[in-house]
Length: 383
Ligand code: ATP
Ligand code: MG
Image (cartoon, rainbow, N blue to C red; front, top):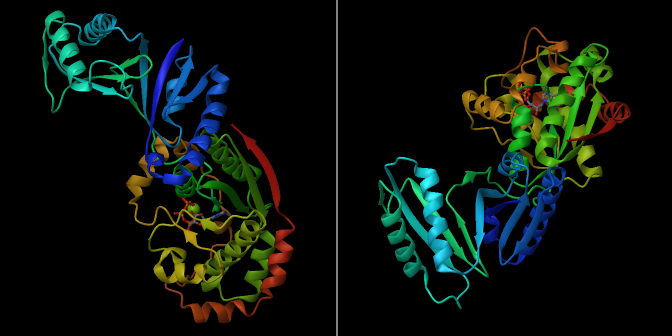
């Protein structure tokens, strides 16, 4: 059975809420490693995972809230055993060498006779004598041999970095407006990584958009469940509303009016699901809805805060993240989006709110929301 000592980050800072965060992290971990026969244990402020399946390492690395995964060896509190095992492990890792190393002991079991500096000195000295071609570098060692002194010794020399963030489901809920594009899945990921429970909502325009276009978004949501275990995916048919907008309004305002309608519908869903915010993949750019003026106009259509986690990202950064979380290849599939179906020939890129409201007054917006809302569909997507 392999043993992994798990280091988790910021939640140690959360004071009274610490228990809540830890419990959530533990239950998230249990459901993620369960399928791999992993067992999760928590004691004395440390998480330990046991499993025989190596595939568990990337799963742990991709769990929000974790910082490092350390494959560990558990030993009895016997310095002689520790010395020999430490030297063996170093030999395995160093091979012919040369390599620099440092021993870092932490004694939380104060009844153990040696303190941390004494253990560092003892084990470091033993390694220097028994492993060829190694030297100590306390500032920037290539290898850190860490020892935790608890009811037993836990020793580890290798660590795998994890995603960081905070445990999923500890920071409230947000309705994420999900197109089939590159940005919105990344925005959803960024929020989920900060602990926010996400409720993906997509607008399609069937029959003008295809079943394949909807399925592409479904696939993106499915990919996100790798991080969240499961998600309710909502979709709404905007086609009738788009036709109504087209019949009544100046084409320069189609995009922004449509965006305000989406925002209203997303708010309705959020209110029903007790989500306290909306999230979009918007990023300051020179398209109508993504100028500051455009953002003012969409924000005006909701009482909820709208989070835009990518607002300051460069496209390259977004693409890099999309590749990392494996949504990129799906996002670039060439299916039409509802926003591009009725593309106007002229667009107001810096719309004034007063003008937009005047244009919107030509519609019965409440009725449009009610009628469009009737098309909502919920699907449960599981990892
Ligand atoms: P993305 O790559 O996420 O599509 P984008 O850069 O193409 O973003 P837009 O198409 O203007 O920009 O969309 C901006 C944001 O509006 C999206 O990130 C998403 O949050 C929301 N959005 C756009 N179209 C839809 C849609 N069909 N359904 C749900 N949300 C949408
Ligand atoms: Mg888009």
